[in-house]
Length: 355
Image (cartoon, rainbow, N blue to C red; front, side, top):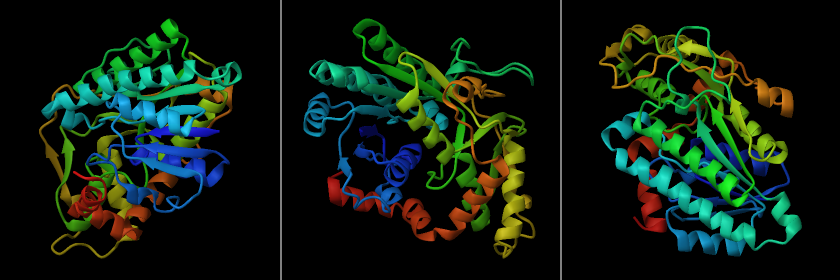
């Protein structure tokens, strides 16, 4: 198959592209506008693969998408392009509405128009897989409940509201036009190549630099964590074998408070990077509690029983094994980290593709 992957230079998107080209016979067309979080250096290991093509295209550009579909003739779309940082959505919601709502609508229309021109056998086999988040469900009350595919939507932030809206658009295109769609809603991801505005890479890099480790409120917010490579495997499995029109929740069965995650990173760094920054006796001494963000959900947790029962997917990494791999990766990949934190990758991108 030939996969058209939107947002393939982002954190989860690049993991999907690396998995497809490294572990399957499929081909990939990566469609990415290369915002601040899109980094082609995350794809260096597959960039020269003959099955890989890159298109520097904004999913809000209808004409460009029509050309991409016509030229590359994909068998499936995996839609990961999105603005995804909750804090940024609070300070600047407009970009989230533009990309996550308008962009998804434009992409759905381009995919539908292309799909309608395909021969019947290719129409039947075609899939549009929309990759979403568990944050569309809002906040869980109490310590015991889990998000299921039937949980009502109750988004709390501009980010999660925009993703909820995009989910509804995808279902509408399936119900109204018959476009063969799939939706997945996933818990928090972590792993290599994660842009350092997110919690785990931020804590690793700040600790190594001797900077404060910011924790919102009292740090008791609970998240279900999934290693990004497990997520990539799940996404491909859903696209290949999932039932059209269905939603599949994906989770790692790893519930931890934010404070527990930060403390676990500090413990790993004591072992893997025992040379502390100047003036720091222990990494955990850098933990700093800061004012909680507006509308901060207390707990997310996923019931991933459906994807496990129907498609046989299970996460391969525990949180302990995945977090160790993640911390070690950041310690071993100074060049990638330096390129991201210095902004050098943006300079290269602007020179290569234009600002």
